[in-house]
Image 1 (cartoon, one colour):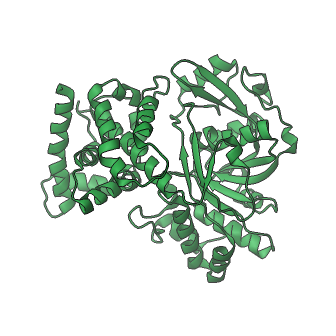
Image 2 (tube, one colour):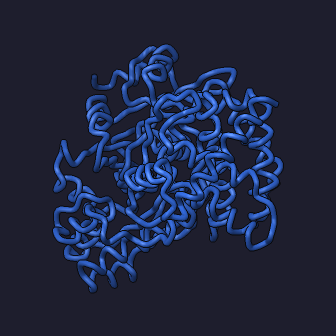
Image 3 (tube, rainbow, N blue to C red):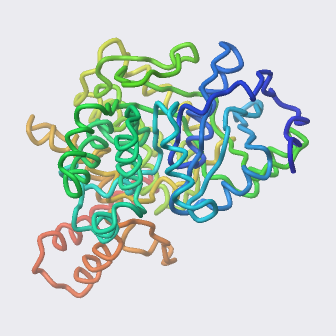
Length: 463
């Protein structure tokens, strides 16, 4: 396929790609990274002559994504979808694309150990950290983590790969790199630091100390709605650009990136592309996780159960739209302390973004991995309300919606395909509840929530 994308009807790379230096290794070449961090880098190269390039790596899954990228000279298309029009750009900042199953682990580790590598960034979703959402600690008893600890030179987890790369850099006398999580978790830099240092301590105490002394783990807040790529998405991109791109991705026009300015070996000037560099990301993380992601999950579970396939479908129902807006401002906003942000304006913008008919963001996609998402999206706010003796009816409804959703059957009696790393535990709880066992308080809460969610959905649909 070669350079066929350079003939696309799109904004094309005008910079000399040969002058890019691969200084960032990114783990998790998924749709979000392509539409977010990749675009920031492309803007910097296009408008500000940045020479920061990427090595893209997938460790588990996504083999076809990497193969597609390799076949088209590491170029890919990002289409921005507004209600009125689509625009496209071809991103050219990727220097090399690798997959453990295609290229081998040693090739990946060798890339991470090149002297000029300054940053290893990640978008591997919450479950990729193998940490407890409740405590933030690495699950050292997880089978994949156990396997890596027993065989640290042949790791399979992202944490194991990062630590092995750092160990090799230390042994070679090379400087450490910054490790930057770009996943939707509160204080994701602290989570990344905790899992890396805990894992390192389990295999080599001296290495763990070297990591603590030499590696930084900045926190980030990332925001851009990027629906899962479908055949329809790719067809629309081809119609727009005139070129077929199997690695293409579509997203909304809005993007935001807030970054803790804490880098051990330099960084791109992301602020020139619109990112915000701050000393404390947590207030921004909590704002986004609770108001955006929390309301997204709220709509995903309740909307899916009511038969709505997309978030914009929910927005066309005034009862769902008003409920999401009330959740943001009445129950999530009071829990936040973020300076210089008008939360009512922020909520208005979120409702506008959700209503974009071009996005067609599936409720099922957002509903995935709820056990990993609800703590930071809803449960932390519930704790705040309990401590302040205030009402949280909509938050309770959202949690009840998740409980009803993981029951595995929708309101029409059709089976729900549940995707969650704790699915066996969830299924056991649901089965116990169905059998009427009262041994677990969790099962009792589930039964109570089933009644609650049925009543709530009936109420919403009849208004």
